[in-house]
Length: 368
Ligand code: HSE
Image (cartoon, rainbow, N blue to C red; front, side):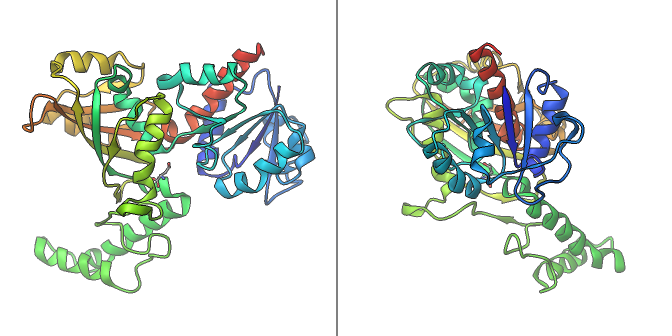
């Protein structure tokens, strides 16, 4: 199988490359590396000695691949996908971007949760597969078992989204902001909390703090807005919650999902506080069992201070494929209301991992 990779040098693409190398995914395929900015430059070793980067806008070159995996972003997909199809290309397109997600002829891929939907799509001839929104994918990796068991009447999700979800430049700006707001505390050290607060707040409001990317200080603060506005007061990130959850799970009628999406100053883990309205009073032990058995990466964190502080944080989860679910308890709203908190690495299950696994499913499906 000739597999073309586009956008493999970006943040998501680099994590994808790392995971593909770790899992020996390059064995048995012929990888072709494309570029939009360094055409003719040296390709990674996987493509063979002396191989050069191909032009990612060259439809003929792209069409020579059986499968294309793109981490290049939505603009690239918008520009290339339709013309490539119109040129007669019948290959498989696997994409991290949101462009094709909601199209009728595309499947959203998160195989530990919806392998049946993916395989059904392959059997029906679907050729476009898009990774889900990271927040939705990580939520479903955590509590998808309850949706699968048809136990959810509705759900709210209040998110705490990492800088990485907005791209590499945002991550770098966040760290520069962190540095900037602590400069005065190092110049004039103080053990007085109010004095330190004054210095930090002053630095945050100072015109010198880098805010080109976020438009506001995120370090030591938060921004309750992710993505562009939608009708009825939602942001697009919030809109995706319901649209993608129901598409991934194949739910009819759809289960309402909504909430407020918030950017916080974490690096690469998205967290979410969930309020799940169950359609019956399920004992908590049964709930924990359903969640623990739903996929091999869920980690149920006991609802106590020691375990929560040690295991249910972005710092603890970062860089791991495990998705932590904790703070599980019935809310005082009633016995059918479940509270939960989940943390997952946005670059792994939220972006790169479903793509490489889709390639594996495809190879299995095609018998190579
Ligand atoms: N839109 C998400 C975010 C990232 O901004 O955090 C990936 O789906």
